[in-house]
Length: 233
Length: 233
Image (spheres, rainbow over the protein chains, first blue to last red):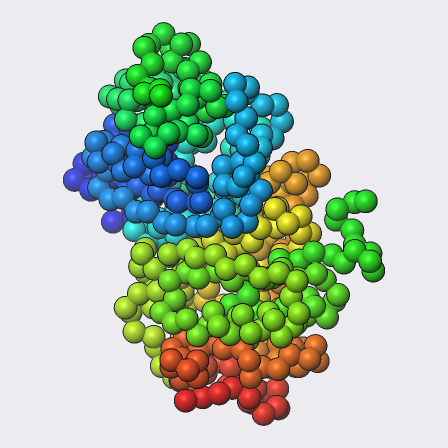
């Protein structure tokens, strides 16, 4: 059988990059709703809190992923971002240009690790919750980056050389507003109270409500016209 | 000053991917011989032995690198290669096609991490000792892969977006035979006795002399017409 085709008895295999946040959890919910066999990949990259990893575990289990891998990569030792170093996280503002929370080459590193796992598990797709609307300041959230990565992956891998194609990078949230993301996730049955988006949660995993991620998330629920189930401290 | 130009008082900054093996150590020796300020990056990716990491440390110190970072990435948890799992390492043969020692997406992961460090350290170049001659079976050792990665990196990074270019990927060994690599390294003053290439060294870091890497290395010294300084067990 062509490894790039699926059937009702042999679902398509997808690697889903899962942080436990709103966007990546929605990605997983959408991939599961398509009937894919989802193998989640959570990357520990020197974040300053573990609450996000706990959320990822709960989300993968709740949504019925077939596999969940955690890989630690200490990008924090490189410095250069408010998410991995001592630069303060900005409050109550949505930044212009490239934000200080930008992690150098983050999605390149994440997709590379997903590509390695996809090759080992013979997955046909890699799902990533990048979004060019709310995160327009991040260079590695743009469609042109994703297309260049996909092309590179075709040349980088055994499956690319032998079959002429590499795992497809699927970005279902690319052109959606936060409100639209929430609407699609809810339609797929996702309970957002188990997800965690905040850059600065407390020890119990409750959101601060004021960082850039919380601000965008709160706006999203308001614009979607649904009650915000987020647990704020 | 243009961050992509160097001067005698402000040498060009290069990230050098360094395993401590023959190829990457030669890369560092060549970059140092050019007068670059070299920041080495050694990636611990679930290899079965630590001797290689020790060799990397000795090589970076001996050659005078300005910085040396170690990043642990547990690709071993993915499986899929003789270098990171329990597949036996083949002895006394140079394989045809894609070898079992191929690590899925390895150079993609390595270059992604180097790209992250290059962005933080504002390095203009990334040096990697890939070679399309001896390792023709590895898809991620080919020039077309390197070019695709470079293009992707321009779209992935802050420096790519703001300056219109990303760190250049430098591959000085791409089209050299093992003998030519050794000759260039020796001309740059590299003492190969401190490097370690073997896939299966003993606890003291002595090479087995029989794995594919040892076989190619031994042939290289023989063809270069120089005494092999490798410490075999």
